[in-house]
Amino acid sequence: MDIIITICSGFLLLVGSFLCISGGIGLLRFPDFYTRMHAVGVTDTLGAGMILVGLMMLSTDFLVFAKLVMVLLFTLLIGPTTSHVLAKAAFHNGVRPKDSNNLEQSKEKENTSSIL
Amino acid sequence: MIDIVLLSLLVVIAIAIIRMKDLFAVVMLTGIYGLLSASFFVAMDAVDVAFTEAAVGAGISTLLMLVVITMTGRKEKSTRHKPLSALFVVMLTGGLLIYGTLDMPYFGSADAPIHKHTSPRYINDSMEEIGIPNIVTSVLASYRAFDTFGEVVVIFTAGIGVLTLLCVARSQKNDEEIDSINDSMHQQHLVIRIVAKMLIPFIFLFALYVQFHGDFGPGGGFQAGVIFASAIILYAMLFGLSTARKVINQTFVQVIAALGVLLYGSVGIVSLMNGGNFLDYNVLSSNPIAGQHLGILLIEWGVGCTVASVMVVIFFNFAGRRAFQQHKKQAQDKESSAC
Image (tube, rainbow over all chains, first blue to last red; front, top):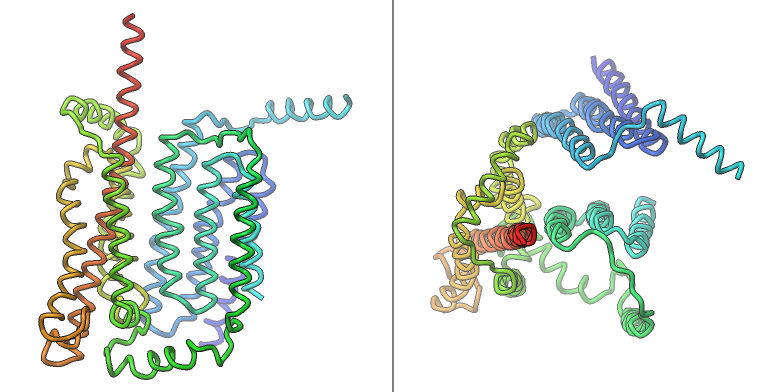
């Protein structure tokens, strides 16, 4: 029984860490504000959530478990809300998502500028 | 290893803060700087300091600076003169300070004076003398109560300074106009308003937990006050300043700020009257340990009251000033268009 719990929590911790790292890479590499925010949102909810669940499985003390549950609930509540507010503020202040046309245009511009 | 990573990150962020011209990004970086130093303190096992740094440095000071930026504009003005003399003064002071540290004992050395007399006394005897598990709280609130009193008075003075500089007399008409603006805003920020409504009671509860749990774990009046104030500030930001002013009367908050300092000082005076030294809690009760507990509870309560209400007062005045400016601008615009 113990070994199953350890393996499960290890798996969850691993997947959570992978999601956090991929979120960080996405933050650096995605083209515009909204896709970047999506990457951060993945880190916020799923990555942190999986790590917390993995830690919950390992916890032997009930108090630690309860604290982790509360942290999980708060992250689940706050993460999406902050993402929503951030996106709303950005849209309100005139940041528009890059669509494919825009991307092509900017690429063309880059090409022309490099040629020049 | 983790110390080196954190410290180098701190240096990188400090350089970025100096070089940035966008003040909004600078404020965000200051917040990150505060959070990083908090994690550095945790790595050094100073949990209480880290908690304070996270609450004050990363939390409320970032918030207050953001409010200031909404008044002043977010771009730094380009300096025309070259501040060489300032650089010289800074270099000189820094050099002198570094020269001063040469005489100090090495970091963590066992034969430093503080590790010979003070630390062993606190670690060995504080449980018998004060009787609370968290040594940091017993040092802060009992052994060094006079210093803490000074800190509280400093915070109170800062609140008074903001009040004298920024206090704005508000007319009733002004209030109504802000109200109408707020009412329209309420329909726009539905999600965050509901989530904040759910969270604010928990924030208050957490603040009270930190306040009264300071004897046993990291926490105490300073952190609790800041958390309490941040819940009120969250409410004021989301529901509008005038709504928040209806809920929390500013005069009442100012009185609470003064009462906190008064409570702290009165504990000292009472201990003087009972025949002890100033802020010597042993004489507050027949049992010295019970006296210490009572004294620490009272002064932490005073600290929490003062910190929370001073933060709220500072925020209210900054934000009120901003609303006042906007109102004035609107009035001017109307006049010019009428002309």
